[in-house]
Length: 328
Image 1 (cartoon, rainbow, N blue to C red):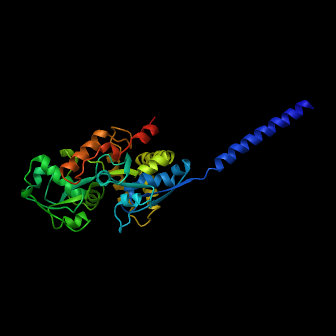
Image 2 (cartoon, helix red, strand yellow):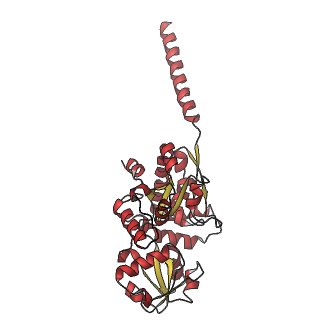
Image 3 (cartoon, rainbow, N blue to C red):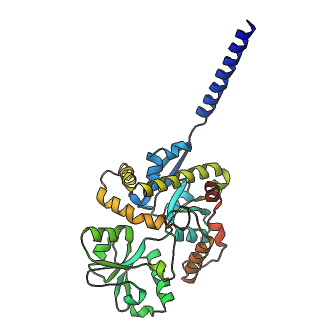
């Protein structure tokens, strides 16, 4: 009789313990956050789509809304500063400029360790180094493409007056190339399109000539980092996991991208993602890890180019604490 009472009590204890654990896990609602992309839906952001579609965000108890660029307010940084989005994807130089202007934003990881920004020509015109630009008409709009170009020319010791630079007034590089010898371009877009169409092309990579820049970084605000460090870490861990999956399986990464915009050209998006992989996973450091020396170099170039005019401590523009935790 005593044994039966003991067994019943023990079973009851086990059942109550399991029920308590279950209720505890179910009682914690998912944190709702949003991320603003720097452009329209495309495989440029495949890791984020995979983190969502493959359940990596859900595994971290996150509910993530993914929003494309707002063409009325282009910079994702503005959306994050205003509190309309929790996280943003933007260029590293945009984060530096914003920080120099007093905006409390901070990068937490780099996605594109090598920038896809290049200076591209098509047809018979061949360019591979800054000296090839002498005597050429170059189409470059305002922004990072222009100051990167100027920094590259300065480092090469070339007289800027020997090159004609104009704003082409178009985002379409192949359209720009009909009117200019060389155009600012993204390797993962314009070179891929040219190759698909069988158009001969060549390009100069600024990073090969002393002007390396991180491209896409993940960022948020100082306040959000201070108030919700656990959410930042979980979001970043899932995002990096998504990028690792996209690199290992670009076909699946492309499929998950098309779930956000079924009208995209699947063949082009897959080739674009494959062209992206060596820019994200360089084989030197884990995906997402940032280097202080790189941030200092970018800062020095922007200060030299007078893109920023107020010096500040560059270490305030980024933090490696979350990537260090993730990679332990």
